Image 1 (cartoon, rainbow, N blue to C red):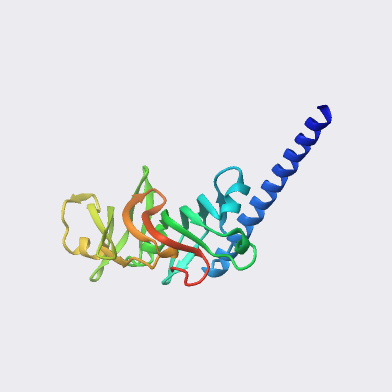
Image 2 (image 1 turned 30 degrees about the vertical axis):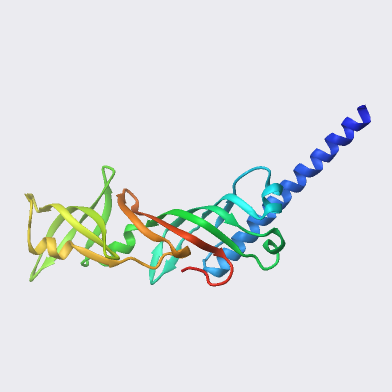
Length: 230
């Protein structure tokens, strides 16, 4: 009996080591393939959820795969980070380490658009900074032959495939205006929503202290394989 228990423990250790080894290899391979397929500047972080990994790998179905990228440039717009959670993922183990095909039944994501991408589309001299935890535009704005100091809060929304930035609580010099007409028009901004990686579709958008956070989702998402959704 003692020999059997020792043997059983040995087998369990071998299986655990094999499970973790294959788990790491699969995550690394998916990260490498995603980087190549979506022309990223660095490998994303990939985490395959669920334990044990072997039972999922044998069945070729995974409950969840989490992908976090670094900076990604799409349509000349730099996204600071794309954080994707893919669910009901199909990835046959026979293909995973050779010619992988990884398709998710659904995915949701948070995409961070840095304020630098909006700032470079604003009038010269206007910057977006974090003020007391909220973004605020400020700087010297050229109005005809004059340049005046202005500042304003900003709101963001998505309208028909366009990110719309609207200034509010505008201040010029020491005076505050609810609606300043020309200044408001000059500070307002519209940016076409870039084509998201993984075929993601924008569902919501929020102004955060460090950038615009875009919520997005998609179904039948090709993470790795033919005909990737860009």
